[in-house]
Image 1 (cartoon, rainbow, N blue to C red):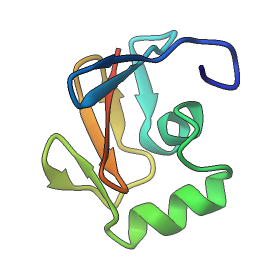
Image 2: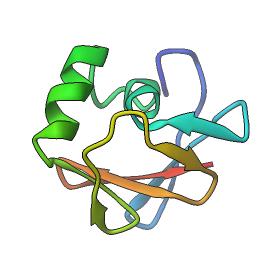
Image 3: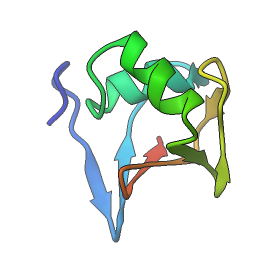
Length: 81
């Protein structure tokens, strides 16, 4: 369960993370999924090339994500749902 009470549903090796709007920025998504604690940590991890979006390294914290996008960090796959 996420900090805000949303339930994360695992589907195979991918965990669905529900969002409220049609779009969320990458840094916000990582915080929502509880894989990082602060925006500063998100910036460091993303700019270091530790995060992929749909199989490609992403270095922009402000990258817009939409439902169906898959983010991988620390070997954990998270799908925007």
